[in-house]
Image 1 (cartoon, rainbow, N blue to C red):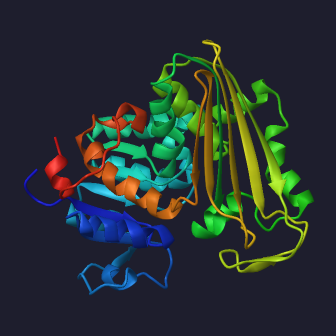
Image 2: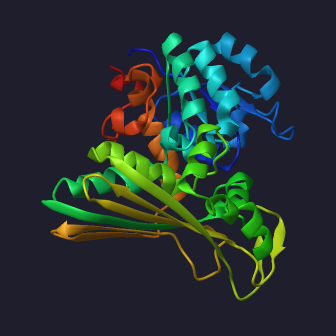
Image 3: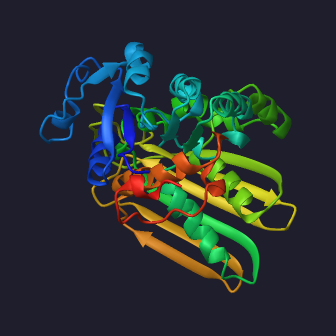
Length: 358
């Protein structure tokens, strides 16, 4: 592809400051931006990322379709919410207009096992209009490709066990609320934990109706099974509140979380497979105390057993760099809702991204 890739940034919050800068540094032309916040609508995107004005202003969601029809982007970068149902409007707009789209939405990483009805709806429209829709982020490497690469050097696997922690302060209010941060323990039990106090049959009905709220690892386990060729027999999820002994102020929630209330949650997802491999993954998302930091630990048990630990990863920057490095892969992929384990390995892009379009 000789000309620059043209991109629209959908959601101009904390994450977009990195995705827009990274795109510009990799030769991508930002031709539009969308947000719901009246404080940023009308602002130049260059001003938002601390650079010179680029002559591209943020458009309201109501005018997004008209703007995208005018600028005709090659891809739309969506950095807004954490559930695919919350991205339905953005995804369906892109699919309707035949615009490729990639999102940091955690459920979008592998939504087939949590909201198949909406996934299929987006897939059908994207195929009809010849574009690719997907989700990516930190998990693409650190909960996905890194794990399957280690598996490739293992003779026999009996269990894959993972744990990853992150500070919800780094990602915005949607993620913090999804983790129950700021809730009392009683509120957490009713609003967050109750969804998993059900039978498998009840859960499948909720999933079929598009009403299930998965933890991030629910979709990661599905992605890993798909990548490794494992057949899922059963999958369960348990969400447990995280607390701290002292009050903690959350700038994202703009509130002080009282000692003993939920600072976030730990979600453990256990997947049993026909091939005898069990995947047990845990994500811990909370408002950090001063001495806490991000950590990513995965163990493959078998012959041989291997553990890999990543301490203090720059999770936000890694997420945004992953999104930007995936742009050529998405544009080059077949049409439909295509999750990244089917798009191929994620590689570092040394040149401008348009040079990698197949």
